[in-house]
Amino acid sequence: MNTVKNKKQNKPFLKRIFNDYKVVVSSEDTFEEKLSFRANKINAFIIVLLYSIILIAFTISIVFFTQLREMVPGYSSSDLLNRAIYLTKKTDSLEQQIALNNKFYKSIEDVLSGNVDEFILRDELSIDSNLINSDIFTIPPNLQDSLLRKYVENEDKFNLTNNELIIENKMFFSPIKGEITQSFNFNENHYAIDIAADIGTPVKSVLDGKIIFSEWSLETGYVVVIDHGENIISVYKHNSKILKEQNDFVQAGEVIAYSGNQGNLSSGPHLHFELWKNGTPINPEPLLNFK
Image 1 (cartoon, rainbow, N blue to C red):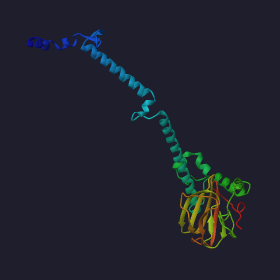
Image 2 (cartoon, rainbow, N blue to C red):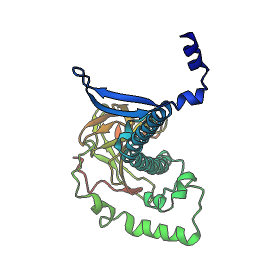
Image 3 (cartoon, rainbow, N blue to C red):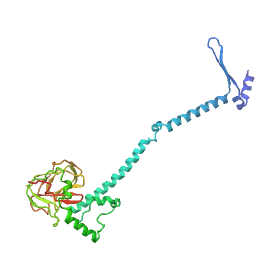
Image 4 (cartoon, rainbow, N blue to C red):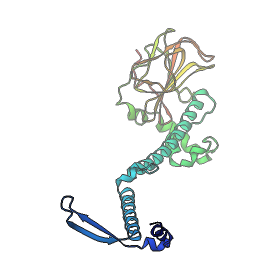
């Protein structure tokens, strides 16, 4: 017996792999043979290997060529990718618009504070996107352009048939009631009207809008600037107290400050009110009732 066992163990490994085996399927009760076939270890190995390769290839095909790939970590759907590309482009566009708005608001702020005498229209900023990254006050106008601008300012910009008619169909709230002590005068660079009012009188927003400036100024006291959209801006100066902060949204007729006599340029208790359209000062008297 030991001799037979030793002979089996001494057979070469490859020969043992190729040894044929008979696989029989029989009935449990009668032991009748139902099915039989020959096989060896190498055939069984090849069959298992082929089955594994087919299964792996089928699984990979399903995962990477169907919507199931979205469940694999590191892969995103095509819709999500397209959405990300769209949002990236939209964000870039919004960043440019914000930069453009900041330049426009800065130019308005410089004119209101008296740092510069020239203002620039928003439409002119949007013509060339390169102006977003440049200083808009470093481009000096030529003589012909200056003469044309002066002519347009004197003849067209401040009459009722242009900018005032563009916004006259809006329902304006009067910022304050009182007597007008100084009217709008372009020739004297007084781009506003002054309304006499007791200190502490509520000052109201003329339209719905967003606060873009709400700070103290040595010359004009507490100042509030509101962007009403459609390039319409209103300015309220010499206030004794402000109730809104920058980036707050306000409704038409909402109280935003209390009038006062603040600032070195104030000559008495009053409200200094300005109205701008497309970067151009507008005479608000034909549009508002201050009595």
